[in-house]
Length: 172
Image 1 (cartoon, helix red, strand yellow):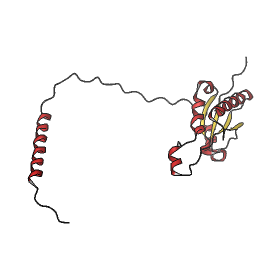
Image 2 (tube, helix red, strand yellow):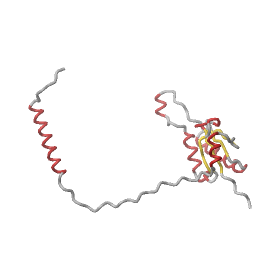
Image 3 (cartoon, helix red, strand yellow):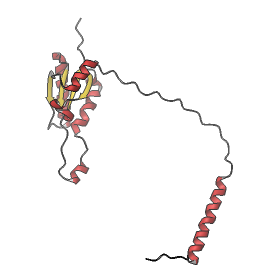
Image 4 (cartoon, one colour):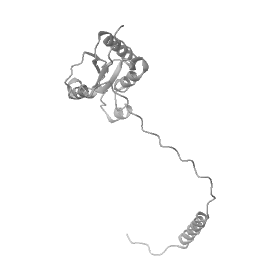
């Protein structure tokens, strides 16, 4: 394919019109702007402080290595969202009453998509895997929970959570 060397009269006229408009815009930009009051300077917001986890360093390390056996466990696989919420609430209240410290909540990783259409239709994580940490942060359950961590591979890995419970207050 050969290159065309000469522009037509119509193309030349269009080019000159565009350049004429561009030079007008540049002239407008060079006008001094009206001075206004300086914008108030916002004070920098300090980063949020991390919440204390309620787990000491040695316990956290043992949890990370999977060296601690949970005192109680619940499997929420296959339950509906509302049933799983009730089961988790009842389970944690019972675990606290029995004096358990470490519980294992098995949520599963969520359904695997068979086709690309299913993959786009589903959320990347399972419903229970998403909702259980939210439920544990609600005031009803948060008063029992000292820390929540992903479980070690031997206890379910990404499909399970360690829920470390607060010490029960001793009766007076």
